[in-house]
Figure 1 (cartoon, rainbow over the protein chains, first blue to last red):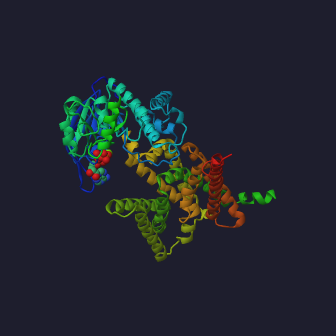
Figure 2 (cartoon, protein in one colour; figure 1 turned 90 degrees about the vertical axis):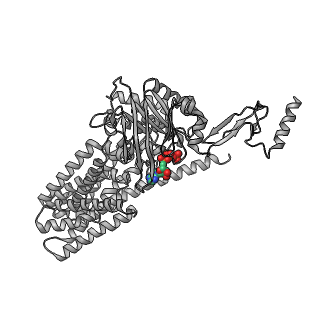
Figure 3 (cartoon, chains in turn brown, yellow; figure 1 turned 135 degrees about the vertical axis):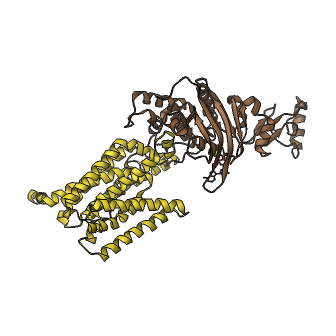
Length: 304
Length: 288
Ligand SMILES: Nc1ncnc2c1ncn2[C@@H]1O[C@H](COP(=O)(O)OP(=O)(O)OP(=O)(O)O)[C@@H](O)[C@H]1O
Ligand SMILES: [Mg+2]
């Protein structure tokens, strides 16, 4: 079975430098340490090296310098012991492959099966439970390509869950996934955290980070800051990480009226925030050019 | 009537040919499930042509043909891997360049040293004249291939479907890659005996491709492909007695006919099923 020793789970990334075959150094001297249970957000712009960092942790890319250790063990050993599961940003699989949802989830259990990889009752039970978790049980006999993008993502998430690894790497699990599923996944991650697991989640969804992540790693070709969310996830650090490419929504410049004059800033790396005002109408980012909207709304308020 | 139908079975050489073809047909079909899904069909063709110089040298030097063939087959595979990593050429170009180079070398060797090597039997196969030692080699290759694939098919399935996950689970994908490549070379050598270098690729692709059209489950795909491989080889070899035609030609023609049948009538992925679905959809959308 997997190393279910009560000892603390940990992920150590020490001075990792990764360069691609074309000489491009995607990550330089990245270091951070996580101990379980924890949900850690990995935040950075496109091309900042998030996926690269995941691949280095999984041993899919060999660091030119530095080391990765999981529970104090080198990566290959940790993989053999089923300590790490990984859900890539985009599954590069052949979607026409003759495998069903159920087959795919059972693949997560290979590490626990015997030489012939014949699933036991225990493996089936865990696979089924994982499918229930992501709400995909009714699709178990579907061929894997006959699913929507979000559903495919959930199946691969279920496979990672079925692996019962104590470290789970999720590369942008929420892109293309609806709100219900996102909420369900976050609830699940919280449960796993209580059980002592470490989850590293890359995301562009800055708003949800303080809600469910207790740790944050900010990255731009190297680790800019890492630590507890309250200390690291600050406006100053975020502006530094994103170098001004964030979308701001300053309330005092927007069409939102009757704010009390103190500055409130909404930052997002992902979609434009959709802000509804007190009357339930859409608010715009700039007041300039919307004078008519502002005037009309003031008049409406006076009518009341 | 019955006399006529049983006639081929009275000859020992026919009986041997039919049985050996069936074994090879089954093994190739088993492997074809992985080859088609891995996208190695062209690789199968390449390897079957690359073994030709090996066969020539082996006959010339008095080695078992399989040894020579196997060595040049692997050399070609390694050569392709090397050229591919060192250049920006696309894979199909690399395969095309390397295997034709090997095949040309084989032709050259055979024409320069026209000893007992019969070019026709290499290129078109000569199962009717197969020697007992060749049968032994074929059986050993087949037994090993069936054993390895039979025991580890689920690992190979994962390797073909999602190599990243295979590595994440701690499987050694480099070993899996080379074992599959080795089995492919070995099986190509065995199939060379029945259908010849030109048609080996059909045995290594068509049954898997046909089965792929008929099911969405990998285990069923294997069962269908192997059944097709064995039956077409049995029937094809048997029928070739009456036509007095090429054994390889008979087997592969039969396999191709079944592929076309599957293409048209497959219950879900066939052309007719697709048309029926389109019509049903049009009907449902039409105003009543
Ligand atoms: N296969 C590759 N070969 C060469 N360079 C690459 C390769 N993959 C990524 N890169 C480069 O490495 C850098 C980091 O890429 P990475 O995929 O890790 O970014 P990311 O943070 O995951 O971005 P995103 O938010 O878009 O997913 C980028 O500059 C990218 O151009
Ligand atoms: Mg990425």
